[in-house]
Image (cartoon, rainbow, N blue to C red; front, side, top):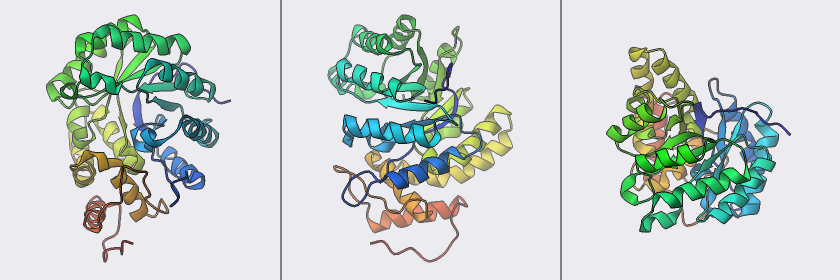
Length: 318
């Protein structure tokens, strides 16, 4: 089985979508094609699956196992695979971690428990990561949520986690606070070894990356991995003019992908891939629902503005 040993999460890491048939079963053929398309982009360093973008909340354990197996079979020889650990409790998280380790993942993206919306203590978070680390030696990525919702970890807690669990090698930073985001970059990436900050501030990606992030992990990479890779290269090269040119193309897409309600962000990405002829349909599992025609038209216009789709008459939406 392919395994990218000694992998440290960094660089441009798209989180792929999960296509479904009209009966809500997984469309494996469309998923394979989607994986090949995203993985072929120059500058992509890894692929993430079984995360928000792939509607992991609506997938059973067995479906997550199958999704990882398909991912490993299709691209595992070429790229590291980051597998999401989406679980409300540590026992389920450990079960998923063991499955992902056996299934060929090279790193694990650990989501916070929804229990934290009622409050958290540092000991809870540290214990959660320790249990996962006891089950696998794969590098761990902490998914950092906004503090306001209760699921984000205060910086002091993050530091306790990385001190207690050396296999934590990165955070996926969605703190939604530019000041705190810069503090994460400066504090975590100055450690020995560094804990890489992977931006998922995709609505303001250029501003985030120029703070010094060592990478990005983004669902919109399922659609614009090429633009994200180009932006990341420009920022690394300190080429502000080039970065601005790429950002001007990303801007209209980010404006529609990350409009409220945010719950539809990956729904919109599926519709974008249908408009681009890269997915056969944009079926989503409940509680998500089909987007209205007016919103799909806004997506079409954004793709045109970004230079990804030729201008023309609006596509008829069923």
